[in-house]
Image (cartoon, rainbow, N blue to C red):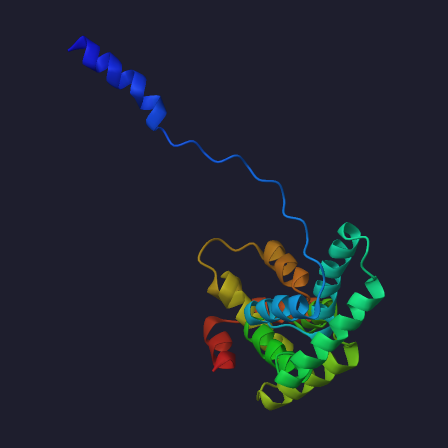
Length: 204
C-alpha cells in the first residue's frame, strides 16, 4: 500500500501541465497594401474614428514596421496609407461629418461641457471651427435655452451631485468636479443650487 502511494506521488509531477515558455514579442509585419487595408478595417470596425486620428494610428504602425524592416521606404508606406484612407472614405467607414455629429450628440448626452467636447474632439484631429459649428447646430435643435446648463445637470445626475446627491453636501468638492468637467463657475453654481424638481424639468 505504501509502495503504491509512493509510486503515485512520484508520478504526479509528470502529469502536471507545464506552462509554455513565454514567446518573445512578434516582430511587426511588413507594410503592404493588403496589410494596411486589413489592419485598418479591423480597427475601424472596433473603433469608429476621425480621418486624422485614423492616420495617426496607422502611421504609428508604419513607423514601427519601418524601424524593424530597414529595407522599407517610409514615404512609400505613407503613400499606400493614403490609398487605404481614400478607400475607407469611399466605403463610408471614414466619414468625418457623420462621425463628428454622432460624437457631439453622444458627448452632450453624457453631460460634457462645450469646452470639454471641444478639447476631446480636437485631440482626435478635428478642426476647431468644424466642432463649434456642429455643436452650435446640435444645441440649437435640442430645444435647450442653455445647453451647457443642461449638460451640467446631466453630469450631476450621472455623478450624484447637487440635488441628485445621496450623501452629505460638499459644495466645494462638487464645484471642483464641475469645474474639472469644463463648466464655468456661474453655470456650476446655478446647477448645484437647483432643486430636484427644477433640474428634472430641464431634462424633460
